[in-house]
Every structure is written in C-alpha cells, then in structure tokens.
Image 1 (cartoon, rainbow, N blue to C red):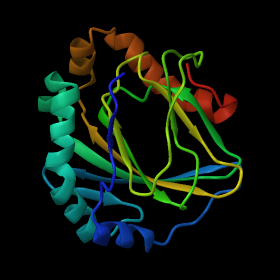
Image 2: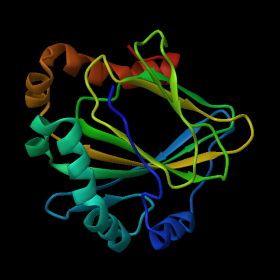
Image 3: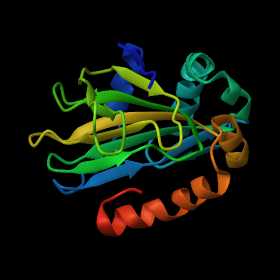
Length: 208
C-alpha cells in the first residue's frame, strides 16, 4: 500500500483554530465523530467547524489533496464530489478494528491534532493483521492513502492514557459503481459491505 506522510500539514493558524473548537469527549472506551463536509459547489454541512472556517480549510488544502490523489490513484481524480473534515475523538481505552474504508472515499487522510503524544495509525498487509506498519504520532502529521476494496487494511486505538483527537480529511465520491470499475472489484459486493458494516461494527465491534 502506498502511504503519503506530510509533516506540518496544516499551517499554524489553522492548527490553532482547530484546537480552539469546542468538542465533547466520549467515554474512555468510546469514539466520537463530528461530521463536517463541503461539496465542490461550496455547499456545507458542519457539526463543529464554523462554515467560514470549513470553506477556508477546503480552499487552502484542496489542491494539495487532489495532487496526492492524482499521485496515488489518478483514475479516481475525476470522480471527486465532496470533502469531509471530520473531527474524531478516540477514548484512551477505545479500539477501532482493522478495516479498509468505504468505497466512497477516494482519498483517506488523517491529521494528528492532540495530545502531544498518542498512538499512531496501523497499516497491514491483510485483514488478519500481518505485516503491521505503524505511522507514529506527531502533532500536525498528515497521512494519506487511496483506499482499495479489501486491500488497504488499517486500524487505530487509544494509548490507554489520553484522548486522541484527529482531523480526518477525505476526498469523496457518490459514484460507487465507477469506483468498483477503477479498482476492478465487484460493485454489488462492495455495496453490500458498505451497507452492513456499520451495523456489524455497532453490535459486534467487527468489520467484514
């Protein structure tokens, strides 16, 4: 799997503004997601990031993200529809299982926000967890990859000490059928996994 790592991804002012956003924390074994998105037509939906700031983030980093997508998976560039800027808070004792992201994510990205030290992101050769590779934690480090069905396996968890806060920056599409075509994967199997995985995770903390 090709992984792009960029230190100091956000400029200083943007990092400081994100740190000032008011968020609630989950239980120590929980994970909380604040959803924020902006379309290519500048339509927004935000749970915690002010609309003006969301547009500024998109304007500042969109070309950078598109450039990374073009490098990692050039055939997906034209499928872009919207961007996600989610804040995810992971409790010290929480774990998210090995998974490969949903098919609507053209480019998956995570920027480490706080604390100063925490657990990084784990990547694997397969769902069993073989060939583990850890991208260590460093504040404002960005990690990006172009997901691929049943191939881009990864996971994350708390460090048993502090709440882990990240900004998830994804380039998204609505054209799942074309994604399957580009990846040479079965569209219907991918769609079924996308539908049922949230329920399997909710009740069994697993991903198929």
